[in-house]
Picture 1: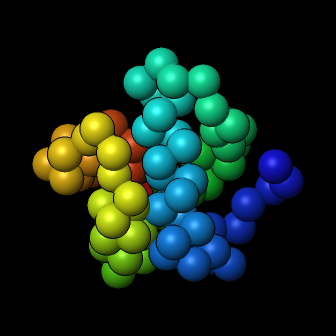
Picture 2: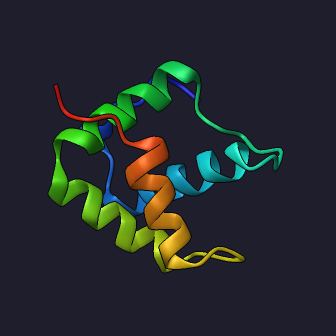
Length: 84
């Protein structure tokens, strides 16, 4: 995967990234973004509430084996960086 620019991604593309990162965080082998890409996405979502909400909605539509509450907790507490 090349360098990602979160502002260039659709909510569905961000939701797909979130699914891959979540899976990797929970021990599933996956093609997760690099640590730098993960940080860029976390920073972006932390500063853009509308983008985070849209990506979360897109991700929830695809959840398998994870509840919406579990996904929301992970996104808001474990993944997203507070906006500086």
